[in-house]
Length: 354
Image (cartoon, rainbow, N blue to C red; front, side):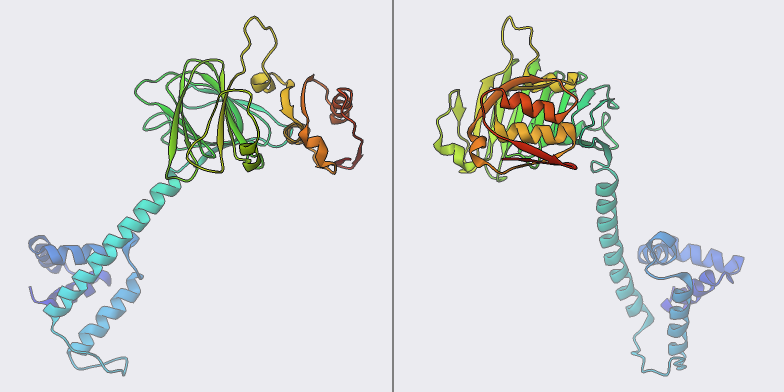
């Protein structure tokens, strides 16, 4: 089929003036010429059209008029053969179509199935939820877990900001991956706690039962793999100052100057006390030789207050305690009773420690 006739048929098709015989002629051309088929589909498929049907019809009209020497736009028209134009148009449209498919296909897939499902808590709030695969999650204050719509079917990928305790439903064929800062926890089915707040300089993973595989990746070039056994806690500290301090338990450095890994035992034998690492899910605030500034960070999230430390020397102290009060002032008074000297005042939602 000559290019001019093809454009005439397209013109009639878009203007809805095509007859039954002309439709048969157009269908025959499309079925027998792959390039014509691609060009027709891309020009008439609404979702892939770069312009509306009226604009396309106008453009085809201008092309047809230019062929007859009637330039309705009163502009100079570059005259090329219909076959040449068709060849170039098909090539351009194929390119546009390919790019459109790649861009919109990948972008929409990313947008639709890239951790679009979210569960959040505010300061002072905690939640207990069940995920689509049957996994139970306790979410601490100021925390968010995100997962994909295909969670439990094609993947079990979770993004965590904050702190969460997981009782993972077992699935040998579909491991769960939990990403929190530079930590990635791989698990098939077990119970553990992960803490990773963006405003804190450390992240922790504490295993209660079963086993987990822990991947630590700071700069996306070097990675360290650790296998954790029940009762162990892995702490990843991003505070550079700790590199010069002695560590009282097993420590190993990964290939970066900005991070150290600390392994310790948090589950004590023959102890009826709930470990500090998981006491929060029972609405208990417990500290076990924890730095003062870490405690303050927890208090801010637990009681939904803002706390400012004016005395930097307080940050050097490690404290232990079991706090179950509903008022942050009571907790601060208990901290003072441990022997640390400080004062505090509260104005509205701001507590100043000095």
